Image 1 (cartoon, one colour):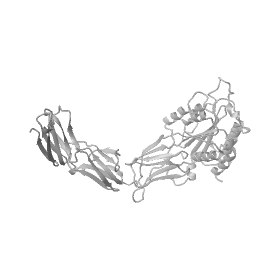
Image 2: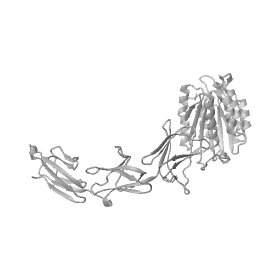
Image 3: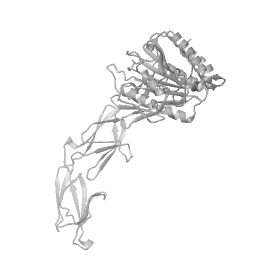
Length: 477
């Protein structure tokens, strides 16, 4: 019978009566090789340190038995199921077992490495558990801090399993300890399983990691099995970006991994394919649900992603093929517009997906887009089709110029053929004389000098603008 099956059977009997919190902080020293299933090799170099609560509160009764009796019985059965696994080192740290609890005189240094990490010491830990008496206080943060020196200095998966029925009692911060470990280069992935805890206690553990309230034995059994399996064997995933041929060839795209429930950003990286087409393998905690965003344009997103424990999971994004948009003027020449910001839109949408400069190349998902040029007047080219692995130049004509001469300040506008305002003078103190940049087409200049007191003195003059040419217009008479 597999170790995981034994744990399931034992947990259904014992754990359903246990009023404890099991907090797992998993630290992985390296990204492991891609695999499609778990194997015996994945079990090598795993160190599990049990941090056991022997504070005075563990003497409280739970369904007819003291908590410490239930907890030691449970842990002993788990140790038996883990016996004989190659490369597995186990150890035991205990707190609250040396100094009797006295109100106002608690011993916050009451934490001891009772059984150092080593292979095949399951029986030593079982005997040590049988001798423990629940006596003192609950120095959780200090115990976690000292575990950093308990692990051998070798490459291994390092797992801390904290078993406790209470919260920090020494005015220290387990969350700060977790942050400190991360600053030292340790990636901390906490699991918290709560059974029968008060709501205020649950809140104290949320900053440490993901909290799971096991309200019934079946839920606890499921979560516990995942926790043990994650301690022994990695869960991982890869993001497969599928092109139009159904192959995972799309790559070099920023990708983000979020916790679906909290919204916390967990990982951000650039998707990469190896020399043989293999993609990134990312180790992951299989318990929470995730949101994955692939930052293509527009982005690809999937929420509520769950990973199968002990497996290498594939997250596929179909229709991830891309083509290239290149906005430019005819002949690709520069002109008086300078660095014109061009906006790419979904068809019919007002908000742009992104803006880019002229002659820049931008990969977007295959499909149709609207491309907006803030020229005079603005130009929006609709229904631009982008095909996979092809370039889609978006070309508009080079502008022309209007050289306008007026004798005096006045009021007026340059209107497009559709009657839209392109330029406007409405202050009355401005002389409209000058050089105006315009896209090719027909326009009307409407003008009245400030001194003229009747509409009869208005001038309305049609003009035609050609690419690269200057059209002269006088408003002097």
